Image 1 (spheres, rainbow, N blue to C red):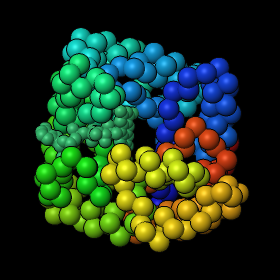
Image 2 (image 1 turned 90 degrees about the horizontal axis):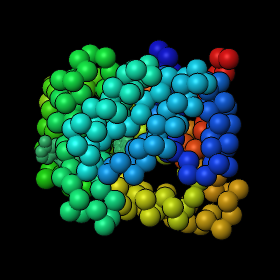
Image 3 (image 1 turned 30 degrees about the vertical axis):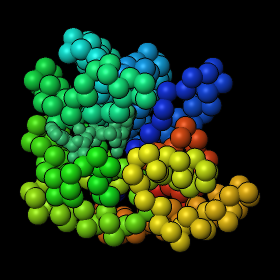
Image 4 (image 1 turned 120 degrees about the vertical axis):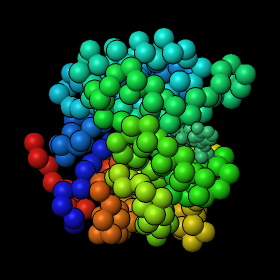
Length: 281
Ligand code: FAD
């Protein structure tokens, strides 16, 4: 393991009371690994504005650092500024700044503001208060014109003031290392933290990967498909695969790991233990 890679865990804002109770348990269990922060997703178009804020408050109340995701979506500059000022007043120090995707059916409701423009807006309005994370795509964003153009726009996010990037999930470590190498050639030296999606549900993974452009290698898809009717088998296989992938990333110099937890703690907990992260509280 390289020198203390950073850990962060991503949640989405729960919709139900039971979901909130479950997530409180997840925070407690994963909080034992002293993550750098818990991040909370934000529905572009402001659809989760209040639920994201509620979850941010709950994380802070538990004494953890938080990184709310933020995007313009269809919101005005005043609305985004109010949210930023609220976060600042609450003591939030980290953000994940994104363009986001408008929910289907909101196509004409607002123009998407690119992440580099959002980062510039945050810096102009709040100076250096926030540590700003942005998204990166080792397999390239599905709307990108080309591989090099996507890296160019990532560079623009850093020029605008971002501190580091968190990647879309992937199952090919070499693609990540190649991407980091190409970023370095393009002058990007900031940390690029791999996003890790545990393998827990075949159908959901296939559907989501198609929409976000993440590649499931053919061999892996077959292996998961074969186990799709036996959840226990699939999870156990997935833990082996993701432990191996994460270890390879850390051994190859990845500066940290960001887990897409889907609000569940059990599998992520096993993965962290397999990787040698220990409970610190
Ligand atoms: P951008 O950086 O703006 O890039 C989008 C596309 O436009 C790319 O193809 C890029 O090459 C190109 N581009 C970038 N800048 C410019 C420019 N100035 N002019 C022209 N083209 C440009 N979505 C949510 O809705 N809510 C979330 O909470 C959320 N969290 C995420 C967390 C992580 C770690 C990641 C990796 C993704 C997350 N997403 C989330 C998904 C993300 O919003 C989508 O992938 C979205 O399509 C792109 O967002 P972005 O910030 O990367 O956009």
